Structures are given as structure tokens and as C-alpha cells.
Length: 143
Image 1: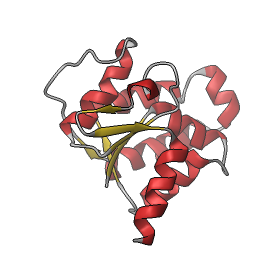
Image 2: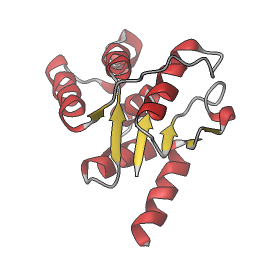
Image 3: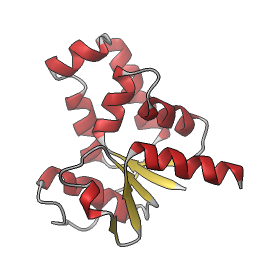
């Protein structure tokens, strides 16, 4: 199973050690799914986790952030989108859809209830909440 995770999933995982997003990161580390990432998404995650407001919530020092980003860079599978899309009305969200399409992702996982989740599905990629993706992983692991 291949998935693209929105930056908001990573941020939530860093902020809350017991939430669903953290469980998803742990399952990725256990190789329950393949994480697809593009350079644009990697850059966005690196930028967002350093926003002052977000840094105050996760309380990680720069070396810890660098370690987390290095893990993503080393163990995520980078894909290079070949097509520029305009599916979401929020232009930066299209980078996630482009990555999912380029990597033939099964899922795009996001907490974006305004722009991405309402799309539901795009060319075979299911756009779901972290809780829905966790349920899908649990079902697959039982089979």
C-alpha cells in the first residue's frame, strides 16, 4: 500500500505522541505502508514544522527536527511529479495530488476538511482522514 501524507499529519504526529497521526508514522516506520514524498512536500514539511506557532507546540529542538526530516528523506520514496494539476482550489494542496498521481498512491491522507477531503478520490487515489487510513491499514494487516 502506498500513501502520501499531508504536512498537517506530520505536524500532528510531532505535537501529540498518542494521536492517530503518530500511530500512522509508527506504522510507516514498521513498513505497514510505503510513504511517497516529493521535493515540494518535503520542503513544505521542513518549513511548516519550524513555524514559531507550531514549534511552540511540538517543542522539538532543531537537531531533533533535522533528525526527523533526515528520516523522511532517507526512508520516504521520492517521486517526481510530471504533471502540474489544478484540482484543489488551494493551490499548494495540488502538490499532494500531483505526488499521489506520480507515485500511483492508494491513499492521500490529510486533515484538510476544507479543500482536500471533499475531493474524496482522484484518479484512483482515495483522499481520506488519518483515522480512515488507520482503519484501512488495520483491515489490511488482518487479512
